[in-house]
Length: 78
Image (cartoon, rainbow, N blue to C red):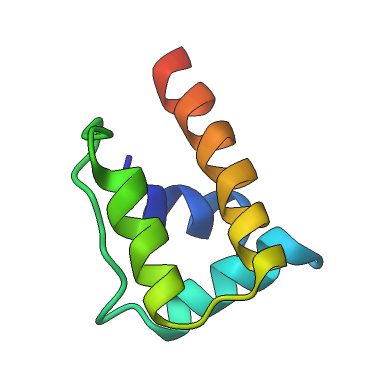
């Protein structure tokens, strides 16, 4: 599962910071970097750089880091 799909599945309908990030990602679906399933190497940096280039605030970057860690735990568990 890609990080994008993870966010859509687990956070899109949530209220709060992770839900806000998921909604922003969906609104930017055509440009948001989407990794292939189980491809983690380098993707964290690519997505973070994308968020920074698009002027994500510090709280958004913090939520991204928390969601990325959750994503890795979830995917590696399977």
